[in-house]
Image (cartoon, rainbow, N blue to C red):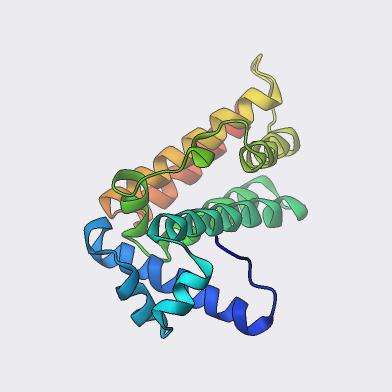
Length: 195
């Protein structure tokens, strides 16, 4: 971002821009994504848009950042509670699916069409470390058997399994089906329960 909003009004403006951009990307793809369309959909002037975002690539980065933060929030929220395994798994899966269902076409565009900044490819980024640490904590808290795999590795496997299924289902438009949801619950249950 060109500058971070500090006042409540400017935060509302930035939120409106990011939300409008996510909606346009979801509905029209990368080729239909322009700064003018975003400003108009957000109800702001193009000057206000450029006050915060130098170009549409910076805006896509902001959408990705927000999405990653939403995912981390889901993980932290379910980890804070002490739930029976089945209830925990259902809350985790439902939370992750809900975050990816806000704009159904968005993830296909972010994964397959929009350019990706190097910062989002870094496997040692602060986000990636914190994100995988949440999965390590899930495994440490809920896995009943070790299977010869340490918690860090098991957390990575669990993260990759959930991310892969959710992202591919989002690409295919099947993310909100009961079969995908229930299948993912069974996979996580099986992985965490394996002795």
